[in-house]
Image 1 (tube, rainbow, N blue to C red):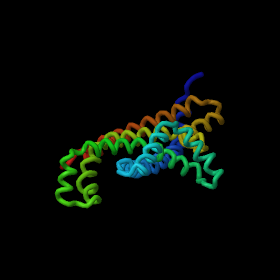
Image 2 (cartoon, helix red, strand yellow):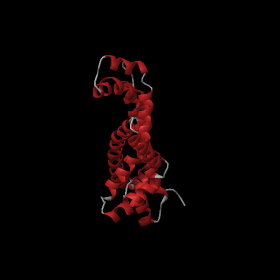
Image 3 (spheres, rainbow, N blue to C red):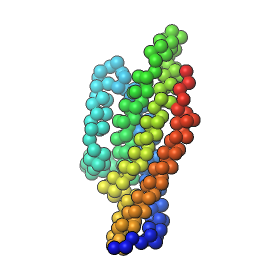
Length: 219
C-alpha cells in the first residue's frame, strides 16, 4: 500500500483539535503534579509518623502501579461511590496525581541538597518555619530540580494517548477515528506522531530556556 502524504495533510485539522485536548490535560495535570508533589514532599518530611508513613505508602503505591490502571479506577470505579467527573477532567487529575508522586521525590532530593548550614542559619536568625521554607530552603531547592521537573511535563504530554482508554479523544483518538472512516490508518497515525514529536521538541526547547533562566541557585 502506497503511503499518501496528502492524507497526512488532510489529517492535520483533526490533529490540531486533538492537540488542544492533549495540551489541556497536560497543563492541568502538570499544575496538579507540581502543587501536590510539593505537598507530598512536605508531609513525608513530617516528624509525625502518623502523617509521614501513610503519605509515603500512598506515594509508593501510586508510583508503583500503571497509569492506565489508575485511569480505569478513577473513571469506572469511583462513580460507583458517587465520585465522578467528565472524562477529560478525570484524565487530567489522574495524570496530575500519578506524576505528583514523581515530582515529590524530585522536590525531596532538592530539599535534601540544601546545605545543612542553611537550616542552622535560619534557626540562628530565629526565623519562623514558614519563613525558613519560603525565604531560605525553597529558593535554593527548586532551582536545583527544574531540569527534572521540566522532563516530567514532556513525559506527561506523551502519556496523554492513554486517556483514550477513558474515551478522551486526543490526537491518537482522532487518528484512529479517521482511519476507521477511510480504512487507512498509516497516514493519520503518522500525522499524530509528527505532531507529538514537534510539540515535544518545542517543550524541550522551552524547558532549556526555563532551566537557563531560573535554574541557577542563588544563596
